[in-house]
Length: 396
Image (tube, rainbow, N blue to C red; front, side):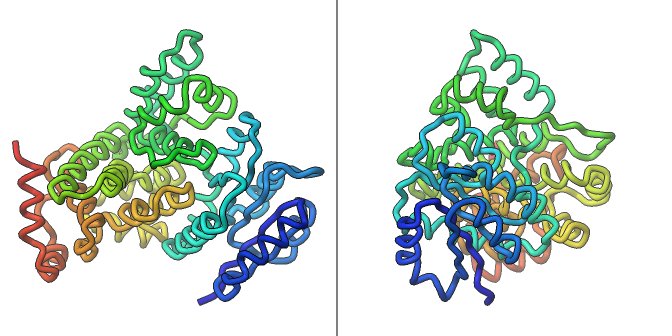
C-alpha cells in the first residue's frame, strides 16, 4: 500500500524537530515533510503532492489560516488540520470554514496520530478524486430555505432566543451537521461527544452562533432549480425517524451511552451524502431519484455508476473529514450494506433506515428485504434479531 503523504508546518524549528522524533515510528506508513513556516510549505507543495496538511495557527509572515486558505484554493484534495493554542476567538471561528479539523495545542502525539490515521483511513473509503476534491472544498451545507430565513431573523434580533435557535437548528439536517462539527472540535475541549443539536447550541451560546452565522456564514440556503424528486424537509424527517429507530434498537441491545449516541447520530445523518449530491448535481441527481425507489440498495448502486460513489460513501467521507467519530462515519457509509449486519452498530443503522422507509410510504418504497439482503442476514444467522428489531421499531 502506498504511504500517505503528510506535510507538517510550524515556525518553531525546535517544535518541528520534536515532532519528527515523536512521529519517527510512523515512517513506514507515512511519508512526512516538515516545513518551517507557510512560505516554505508552499514551496514544498509546488513540487510534491500531499494528502494531509497539519499546520500551526500562529506564525509570523503567513499565519496558518492564510496558508490553509491558499491550500484550499490550490490543492483542494488535501485534508486541512490546524493545530494551535491560539485563543483569539474570531480567528478560531474563522478557521472553521477553512480547516476541516482543529486540534488544541499543546496536543499529545497520540491525539495527533489518531487524527491523521483516521484521515488516512478515510481516504480509502472513496474512489472518486472528483468527489474528494468537491467534498474537501465544502465549508457549509445548504439548509431548508424556511429554516435558513428563520435562523437569520432570530440571530439578527438583539433579543434572539438561544432556545428558539436550537429548535430551528434541530429541524434542519445541514445545520445540525455543522453545529455538531463545531461544538465537538478540540477548541471547545468538551469531555464527551455532543450528539444533540439543541445541546450543541446551548454549549456554544448565542454570541458565538451569531458570529458563526452573520460574520462567517456557516449556514447557507438551498436553492433548488426545478427539482421534483428531492426534498430537504422529507430527507430530514426521514433522518429523525431513522435516528429514533436506531435509539430503540441500541436500548434493546443494552448498549452503553457512547455507542447509543454514536448510533443515533449516524441514524440522523445517514443520508447527508444526498444533500451533497443534490447540491452539486441538481438536475442529474433529481433525474436519478425519479427512476429509482428511494430506500433501496439499488439507489446506492446506481449512484456509484453515475457519480463514482454512493450517497452513504459521500456522507461518511464528509463526516470523517470533519472529525466525526470513525464508527459513526462507517455506519453512514454502510447503511445500505446488509453484509455488515453482524456488527451491531452498523446493523442498527442499516435496520433503522430500512424500517423508516418501510413505515413511511411517502418517504420511499423500502418494502420487504431484497433477496440479496435477506440472504445476507440469514447467512449471518441474524434474521430473528432483525425481526425482533422490526417489532420494536414498527409497532403501532
